[in-house]
Length: 596
Image (cartoon, rainbow, N blue to C red; front, side, top):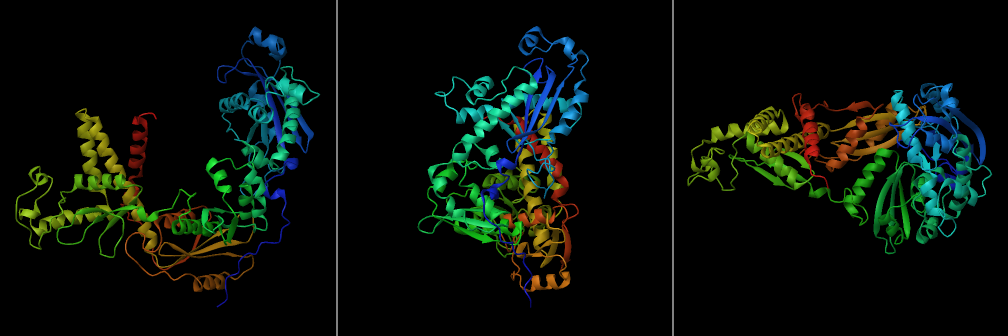
């Protein structure tokens, strides 16, 4: 059987450009505003000035006075020289803002666009004390019902504080920096002049960033501190890596894994660890121990994400904090037997019992357990009870009416079986009885001003619904023996990323090239896919996190189902139907949480 054709990456000459858009090719919009005051919302813009710079050259300028619609304070006129008479005939912000945004071209490019391309709109906004200017521009957009384009922003003020010492300048004001860098345009509190001066200061700062390993727009936007000696000395470890999706493993001198990561571009991502763009202290510490990088190329981004999860769970690298111990997940189980009870477990067994979860913590599992016990009088004792019931003194819960006391024979096996059946249905099907019981309890407690107890019931209900929804979503996919789905490959017309999923586990991944026979391709993919046997529980063949990762991809835009061997359905009246209750519970809990 022929193997599915995987898309081979063309040989690429490795350069610093691989890190992103080179600084010389980036487009920078340097902006300065004059206003009637110091706070957006309470003050208005009186002048906008902007300089567009690319490759060290000015490629455009924008300047306009703005009628603020209110008097200009005398001290502002004294500072800027902008008088009421000057703005009286100027256009309002509603007329100036659209022209400025068109000139600025701040909209980010769509997925697959070319960052840094002057026609792509990936322009970086630059300002001195950018928080001030951005706040006024955001407020102006909001007033005009325009969405703020959310560009990347570089603030020359904190950048200068990192790069220019107090031994060199007495302060980091724009005028001081302009004199230090011998900028011909000096700031005079007029927007265009100040924007020109800021552009000159930016160029001076960029010259200082080069020796620190900052060579791209992405590194500039992420710059916080200079790269360490270890980062600079180990850049060679990223040489020769493939450019495409995959997993990378940082290893120490003994070959032990230190960190596992994924990326849609292995070369770019690994190189970024050895530049100023990587500022996390823990990662910089790890770089000092790294001796090698092992790349694991993958056909698609989904395959890379799944392989990363599996490697982290298997190898448990010390510098990974996420997904290291999926086996520690907590489940809630209704035990088999004549008199089932609810039990928190770590392992799903092939015992025919229904399972709820997995839960993010043991406390979440306990809250869900208490929710079910609030709705159904299941026994909580661990006493062994014979098929026809037991004998002996009743427990306190039976005396309180919260248990029918099957351990004493007061409740028959048939009566108890009805409670167990209802609990099972709530776990794997319709949770309406739990929802009704808990909502009634919450309402009664709130009416009696017992708000803390009501909040406890609220948290129990939310935990139960989250666990039930999660297990029902997982079970819906893992109940399918084989599913094949495809999605157009971004940026490569005619290509498709195709995945075979068996019982919720990613079994195969490949890219179908334009012109390939889809039937033959899918047949080859499934013939060479991993064999996945059936198993117990909502996640029988993979960690729940992997199945949820596959689910997110299947639900992403553009995915098409090619083939599946069983219906893919969730319970019509399942826990997902009550998502608004879990949202309400989360919002209420956040609103009442004590500030940290």
